[in-house]
Image (tube, rainbow, N blue to C red):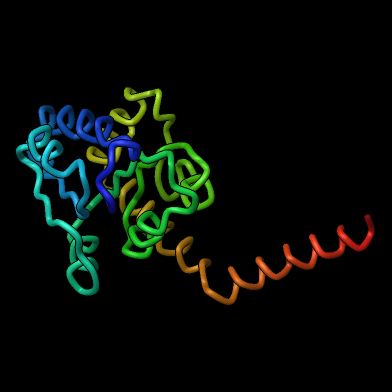
Length: 172
């Protein structure tokens, strides 16, 4: 989950996890990260495993040990954690927000929901938990889509934008 701060919709995360835990006995949530909201989150989610801040192999193992990536933050400008989850083959359940829209194609490699629509997050989570074939298909799509994010491709796109801006400046 990354930095544990309330503006990342941690309350929404906790509410959905608790609802899913109540319905499915095989749900075990894992929170990777640290921050000022950690202690309160532990109180809200007593059945959750909190790892604290992880890097390297430990971080990779946490992704590889998961079935779904749930990240309802709508304050991300890009969402590196989402891209990491995708590269690990996880279907993503994320906020329908700027950072997530560029990474998660709704219905293809995951689902996006408005942070105002808690029920949609719950229903998409339920759908992913109930349908192993859907998770498998979305897993494959996450891996494919994450492979598109190479340094060469990202930097050439950035350079293209710079050239377009420079051209506009010359014209004006």
